[in-house]
Image (cartoon, rainbow, N blue to C red; front, side, top):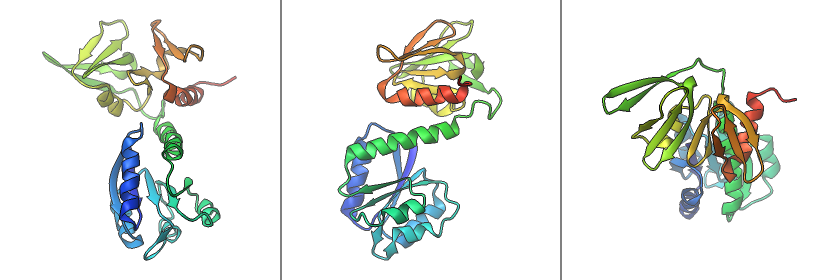
Length: 241
C-alpha cells in the first residue's frame, strides 16, 4: 500500500485531495497532513511516506524551499498548486509530478498508477533474498511451505486457494491481500483474484484481454490495470532478445 502525506495550508484543499485519494481504484494510505512548512517538516522527519502532495505557496513560505532541507529524501513529491510558473523550479528539484488545481481525479490517478508501478518494481527483486518459508495456519496447526514451490494463489472471497507444485491445493482462511503483503519478492498481482509466482510463468499472451500460462498449464487472466506492470516485471525478470 502506498503511504501518502498532504501538505497544504487550505483545509478544503486537504480534505478534497484526501477524498479523491479515497475514491481512486488504488490502495493509498493517508498517514498524515500538515498546513505549513514548519508542521510539514516535522511530519516528514517522523514519518516515512512514499509520496508527498505538496502545495507551492504556503502561509510561511514556498513548498519548494522545504525540499531544500531534505537533500536525501526517499519519497516522491507531487506538487499540487494553482500556479503554473513554479513548474521549472519544481522539475529541477526532481519533483515526480506537478498537478494544477483544481485537481483532476483522472490525471491524479494516472500519475499514481505510474508511481505505484515504480515503487513495486523497486521492491520486486527476485534475487535480492533467498527463498523464504511461509507458515500457513490450518485446522490442525501450521503448514510450512517453501515459497518457491507455490505456483499461484487465487482469491475465494475471504479465503485463498494456494496451488503448490506436486501437492494438493490448500484453502486458507486468509485474504489474497494478506498474502500479497507478505509475498513481495517474486510474486505479482496480475488480476484482482490472482497472485502468481513469476518464476512459474512460461508465456504471456496479449490477445483476448491478456493471459499468463504457468508451468503447470494453468491459464490466468491479466487484469486491464495490471498489464503494463506485468510486462515490465517479465522484462526485468528475463533476458530480452
